Length: 92
Image (tube, rainbow, N blue to C red):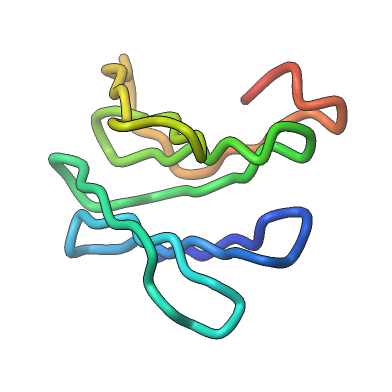
């Protein structure tokens, strides 16, 4: 359902109906995978910190390069898209 490139172009992420988010190298080599409880609707890399936000129909997660897990947060309504501000301070 969605794909996004990291600002540095070295990684990209994909997500879809299989409920999986996969972080890929620019050579299309999968380097990390994590799951949501529902299909992935939106992905967005932070332009400053390179943190990845991912959203399913019921929750969103924030992944960082140095994180051992991806914390998930429940959503009050369905997310269909998301975007960071240019300074990387806010996610909408």
